[in-house]
Length: 227
Image 1 (cartoon, helix red, strand yellow):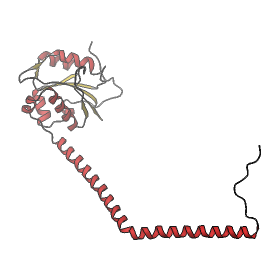
Image 2 (tube, helix red, strand yellow):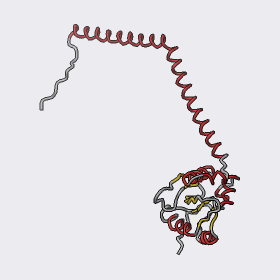
Image 3 (tube, helix red, strand yellow):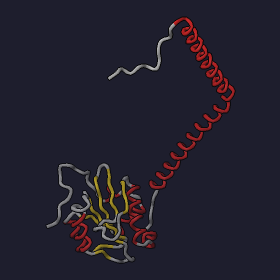
């Protein structure tokens, strides 16, 4: 294959060298003039540039402070959250589930409402850095209503196997039957009735303290399904 010839070659003779030198000098002069023009434009326009820079910095600081203030106010509202029994009684089922989620968030849990058709006995699921994962089944009733053992059976059957929970709790604004409480105590399904709901929601006792939840241990199984 023939060697490709370069498009450029060294000047030959005094005339070509002189021409090349003149072109180089012209290029340098042009570059200097362009740089001088740019510098002059910047010098003439520096007040505008400075004002724009200060304005941009001010907007950034204002947005940062506003976001921090919003987060602080939200945290203060959550920390001060109190819900009375009368308010619970006036809620519908979905509002009750959202209220329980908010109480979990107040107590340091990352919680979300999941209750809907086919939720497999889980209305709210939360996670805590020290206490692991919790599943909450909400049972909103009329005043004086009672929750029976069948709810405990359902929660026990899905909390660990389906939702991977370390703790399961059934919460009602009413009461539990005697058999439901006994069965829950035997099979580690915790329950919160109207009296305990008062302590948790209105008096501000944290859920983990109310139920005396143990810290999660990696060496122990999460859940044991009742035989």
